[in-house]
Image 1 (cartoon, helix red, strand yellow):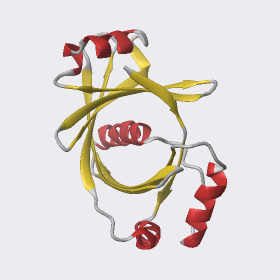
Image 2: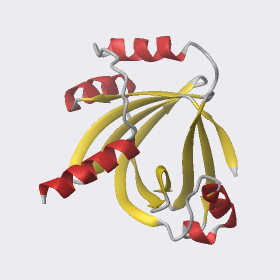
Image 3: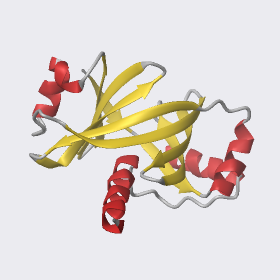
Image 4: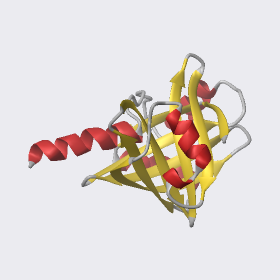
Length: 181
């Protein structure tokens, strides 16, 4: 099981801001990825996802630590409960089979890769919602906040930290949809 501290900055954007920022990095090729989120009734604190992208399934569990967000990942070949490494990892966080499928979030992602970071342009669709997000995923240590702000400033966008992850937005929107019924 691979694991590493994840360092990323991200911001939600309007469609117009997203298109303006993306115009600096043309041409962009968007690839569809489907995130299926899982949890169980024993743990409300932890969940994990399986990301399907170009025929590959990637298990990911994120855990906040004092050093940052520790990300556990592994390519799998089937259901998460069929992979002993996945079961062992999620069990260490109190998530035991059977896993409950919470639902899916579809992202159309275009990436620009540099020596220092991956720039991710994400169009997300979930629970009848659509949002636009720009992520700066650090690959090599540097003043990433300064670099991120400079990228946004080129497009006239002010950096307002994004507090909610895709997973949190997905869960909140599912609750909103339940209340609307």
